[in-house]
Length: 128
Image (cartoon, rainbow, N blue to C red; front, side, top):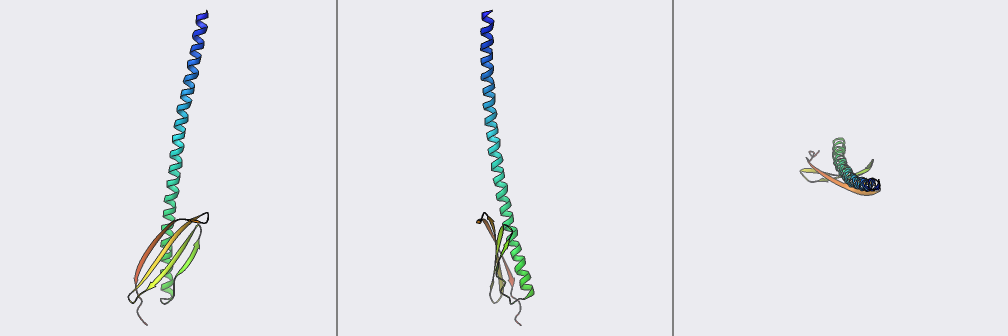
C-alpha cells in the first residue's frame, strides 16, 4: 500500500515537470511567432512608405507637366503638402530642355521617414 502511494507521488511529480516543459516550449514558440509578426509588420510598413514616396514623386511630375502645359514660361516649382507627405517640385530650364525634378517625402510624426526623387527631361518649348 505504501509503495503504491509513493509511485503515484513520483508520477504526479513527473507529470508536473512534463507540463512545465511543454509550457516552456510553447512560450518559446509564441515568442518566435511574435517576433516574426513584428518583423513582417515593420517590413510591410516600410514597403508601403516606399511605394507612397514613389507615388508622391510621380504626382509631382504630373503636376509640373500640367503646369507647363498651361503656361510653358511659368516657374512651376512648388512645395505641396499632401496627406502624410510632401512633394517638392523644381524645374530647371536650359536652352534645349526642361528638367523636372520631383521629390516625394513621407512624413510620420513630423519627421521624414523616406524620400524618393524622380527626374524627367522634356524638350524646351519653341521660342515665341
